[in-house]
Image 1 (cartoon, rainbow, N blue to C red):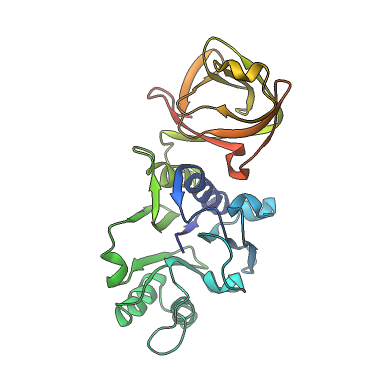
Image 2 (spheres, rainbow, N blue to C red; image 1 turned 30 degrees about the horizontal axis):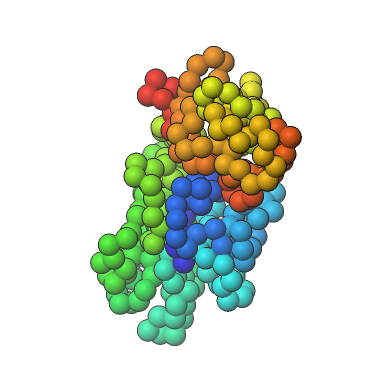
Amino acid sequence: MTIGIAASGTNAGESVLAAVRAAELLGRGAIGGFAVFSVMLDDGKVHHCTTQTGGVTQLTIPDEWLLATRAAAISSGPHRPEPLQQFLPGIDDIGLVTGHRLPNLAGGDGEPLNQSVLRRMADGQTPQHSVDVVLKANSESDAGLIAVDAQGCIGWGNSQRVAARADLGCVHRREGDRQLALQHNSIYFMHGTKDAVGSLAWECLGGAAGRYQLLSMGQRVSLRTAQNDAIHLDADGKIRLIETANPQASYLAGRFTAIYLGTPVWRAGCVIGHAISELIAQVEDGIVLESLEPVSAMVVIRRSANVSS
């Protein structure tokens, strides 16, 4: 598995979703295939939704889940063994365990590592202690683990074997009742964009705004030729108009890079940032009809230094 994340606090579900979306938009590698998204709601019940292909964009997630205060996800390439919940198990009123590499591997005692962490949590051990004990006992296992309990505490770590890899990324932040832990491997980011994943997730939790923002695009957005590339936002902060200096847009019908890397983003007459991901779409008669890559229906921008939200 390539990326795992757990979050606790206000809008933890939205935070987890934003992180994986950003990784799919900005990263290259084993990403955008299978995904498991899981939450524990206020009644303590654990809920899952899964997909084998297309990443988190293909998941049908109820709005209530995005407001959950405990959430987790795991994702990698497509077509993994069923049931997909084996990669992100949970127990009602106890917690959730995600991770990266192979968190469902059987440990020395024959029990899957993530299930072993859950069992220890059910016995009253903290998430961090549970993760530490399991990984210490299985130091050469190919696994990293992240656990979040019903109280919102998070524990995380990598086995000794995984910690020696040169392609790791991790984010761990805690402030008040907000906490976030993210681990990934084998995802390669364009220079200067790797920190966007954790930054976007943390902001959704109510943490300080970072330099990044996810923009969404509705159906049938106008595309017109202009002297310069530009993205124009409406009053709600959604993309309402795309301008391109590429003359092909005036007659093209078909696949087109509607939003080019580095395009400035305008709101209320001011440039608020620049696109650091692209939008490849089906275009016809000056209208962006649909994204040809589902996750790219959203765009990540880097805000200008003097813009905080």
